[in-house]
Length: 193
Length: 193
DNA sequence: GTCTATATAGTGATAGAC
DNA sequence: GTCTATCACTATATAGAC
Picture 1 (cartoon, rainbow over the protein chains, first blue to last red):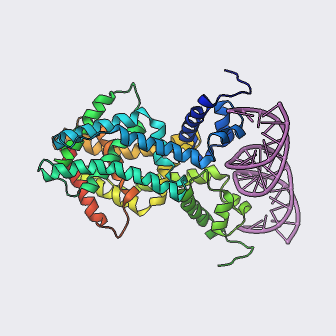
Picture 2: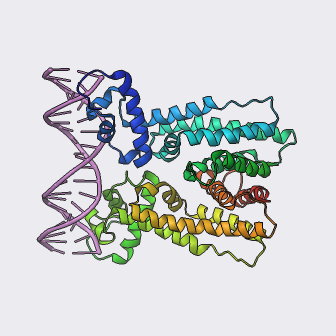
Picture 3: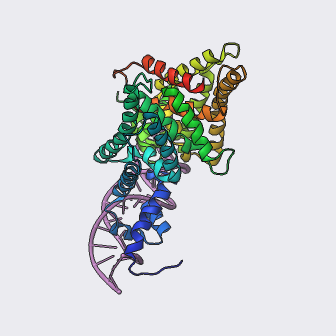
């Protein structure tokens, strides 16, 4: 895969983002140098600045892209019974996060490396996602299907619990992801019923 | 609090650890320089090396100290009913973690900045703590008080859920920590019963 | 025990050649 | 679009004076 000087803008841009995602997740934003990212892509450090104005923007774009993907991928259907909506949320959250561990890891670990402005924008998106789950719990409580003391707290508790799967689940272990999902759904269902 | 050259070993050692804890939690291990820690303590950078052989040891000692404190502070009593043991675990975990947010944050966020050897030692301690909860769930399941499909998964789910409180709870908010604890206990109780 | 000074290496970002 | 070269800083860690 040796390459020499030339024009490769179409592929280099995405490659920069992929390399940064992988390296930030592995070593942490602060510990990864622009030179390391460039080496992973196969260019010199100076060339990266064709694709990003600076290192901070690289981090923010990765996190914003992840949150945007998350919001776009989850389609709640307010017409369905609350319990079914909640079950769909649980399965969606586990599978979506499992499919992109690096982006998830960065989204949770690198918040403090964002500038205050960028942090506020990411937090808005995260809040939007939480609100989707809270709406499900609220509707279920109003309908008398769920029994939760506080929908906001239940929302945060459920999301923390589900996201935790990413920290330990590895393919090929004792249980499949679908079996894990079934057990988490059972625990969530009981917790709110 | 201006200070000059002199002998202060009795107080400087702990101050170095406290400064490192605070700064690592705020900015991340990789982003915090030895000079920044020294400035926080009120000495020059070179003086830190009287108290730690290197930056890595400083991080490891903080994390090991936290995990040791955690294991020493939680006293399970196998003679009690499983449900009471679980309730005590939930309350203990929430309150212990709330009392030392910086140490908790570091223990979860800086694992990847440990050398492989140090990482393995911290993971052993973490595993030990998880085993305490798993034992409670196991005993309760055997006694027919709990109903959990898999005690290991329930253990990880409960710990992730409880630790999540630290990411959002702030004193003086809508609910007190004891009210939060009561709600989490209710959710945990239902999830395993 | 702490200081100053320094060795050695790496950092993000830019300028200008090609 | 990428390269080389470089600027201005900062990093960890050590040596030797006090």
